[in-house]
Image (tube, rainbow, N blue to C red; front, side):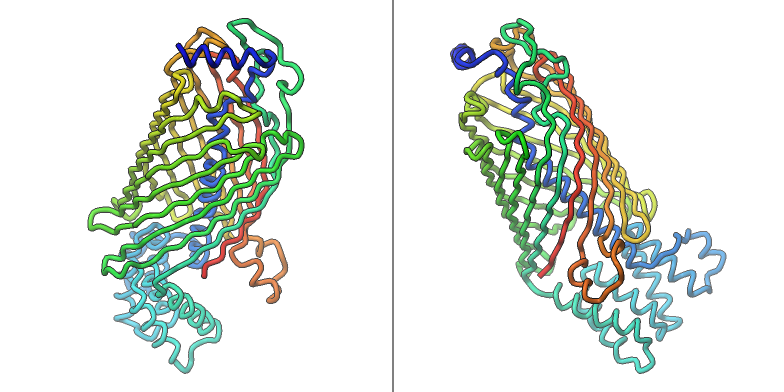
Length: 471
């Protein structure tokens, strides 16, 4: 009751319209993480699309066609590419080994076999295969150029320390940036007041910058254990609603252990987020993730995350310090490759947020499903559907005596295309457009709450350019 009384007193110092609190701060503090996760999802889709294009597979070859024509070498090579696209890299390796026993000098098959060995991280064997292939006197110039490129790639991957930089710059438009109530009213001690001034819906544009730097160091074990580290900077600069400018710095580090039955990643996590140039929230925690490839097509994961969030009261949110407390997240999910060009991902996530004030503490469930579709030329489309429910521990009597329950639905569509596909094939541009992807997305979010202040809808559109550099 002490916290409730204090919160009411602070809120009474301001005008009633300020009780809108510019939407739900719990969602605002998670905005940098959501943007970073979306960037990683798009980047993984771009890598998946590039890997599929490297196969040069016109159309998948089913196994029954191979059974009908077992001596057709070209058909068997295309079947090996189909296996690789479906995630059965070991099966593709076995198929290619059978082909090379019959025709050991078949250069395209040997080149593809070296690629498969690289994907299996059998770099010494891949290097030996490529070097042997490069010594063939009658090797076509196009294949020789690819062999030399792969030899450079193998040498780079054999380094014990790998660095990756990912830079994303873009433009974003929000129809309801301040998450104004869709009821056009807000509650104050259960009295309904009309939205006025800056409490009304405000659309805005923003410049987004996400810079990530990742490092992976091979610990020297035969199993391939690694020490990982990453630094991520997020900056969202609003055009009009400057009090919602967000900056975030995140540092993660910990081991990645490749165990016989799964891959285990455990990391320490540090974060600092500022709102309108003021320190808003600092968090420290740990996170773990277990991953296992159940079949060539099916993968599963389990993840856990705990952190303590220390909020600071600032001009835009004087009661933010009442949100300080631990946050626990547990997730289970998996992915399934439907076809060489389509993949499904799904997960269920449980969140438990503690806070100094019970009316800021909640627990909830979120269900997420997505479909990734690889298109010709390295293009991709990601469609995502997310539904969540949150129940808060106690009413916020400054707003309403009613218990707060939130339900939200988010629909997001993302399209990506390699920039090189849009530009002329000029050699001078190749270093610039390599691993440069243009990404556009549309997101529609709807929140329904038993407390009118937190019921809102927002439409979001963004256009990004993402550049990935490995060194």
